[in-house]
Length: 63
Image 1 (cartoon, rainbow, N blue to C red):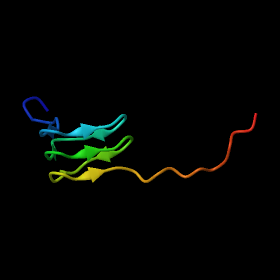
Image 2 (cartoon, rainbow, N blue to C red; image 1 turned 90 degrees about the horizontal axis):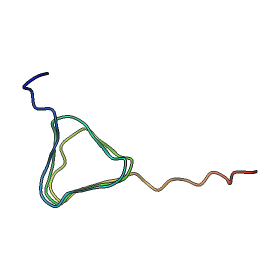
Image 3 (tube, rainbow, N blue to C red; image 1 turned 180 degrees about the horizontal axis):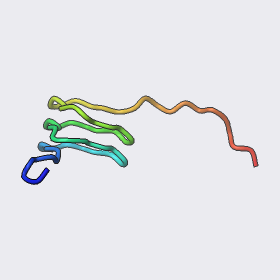
């Protein structure tokens, strides 16, 4: 793996929120938004957003 580029390329004005995972030699285009807890494994075109849907409420925790 020595000498092989393996880190992602983030262009200008990219926002990456908490716990987002960007894997491999991919390009995140200019102005993209990567939401929290999202895995990105493919290139993202400029000005795109990737995020998870809202989480579903299941129930309250009983003490």
